[in-house]
Length: 350
Image (cartoon, rainbow, N blue to C red; front, side, top):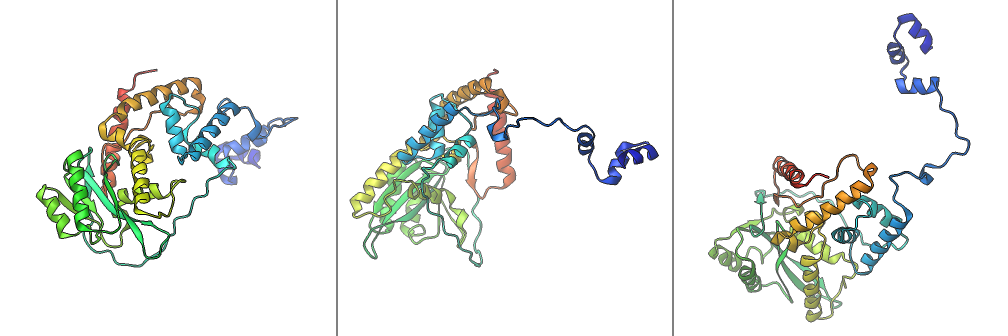
């Protein structure tokens, strides 16, 4: 039919359009490929881009070792990267981890739909460096005893994600929050804005007076809006979903010891996915730039060995230059493009 239509109107393209066939389909039907005598399944083919079994085993060992210490796949990947050991891409590490039999059981976050009217003005905050915006919150640490919970207070720097203040107490109290902020001011200075939810301790007159005396502006989330205070919520979730989190605490001293160890690990060792797998301490003091150079060198070496695994020359991700709450998407996109452009300019040619 195609040949007949082509001979009538003199155009194969029009003939294909009338019959609804694509040019590639007609080509392969007219020129069929020879059948392979012993076809090899695609999963078993030795592509040049495929990760070798030796590298897969090394990745598996690092993932399992990280899980044994309570660390995520991202943490193990970034740690190897910092050691100038680039075995595969970050996505490949996750695929290998998903195929392991020794999977860590992780509880699902319950979700529920609520039809509530949001009231209040939407907070819009922007930070371009550490020490500008702090976010704080209080979470429950459960005990095995009925009607008894411990309260974990935490202040986090929105830009660097570093925990700049924390404490564990048996109750929520205004004066305890004031003391925590005063200690944080002595160590890290005074921020421009402190953001929190609308709980009683967060909107107390004692805390408001202490912060305004230092010239700090206060910001609060809207009722029934879960994403108005994302940084503090994310920090608590990281703590409670670590594999070695005890879930219950028999005494206040146990809860305090747990939080002491967690903050030390979180600030100095945690490979935070929100800041390009650098630790909060590295972003806070600017030392991430040196680590970025080490990672980029490892990535360049990996690119030289396996250029076929990339569509274009890879660039090591860097922390965002603008971070905030409810920022317009246009502003964050412009900041991200500028950051990527500066990263390309700073890299030396291969």
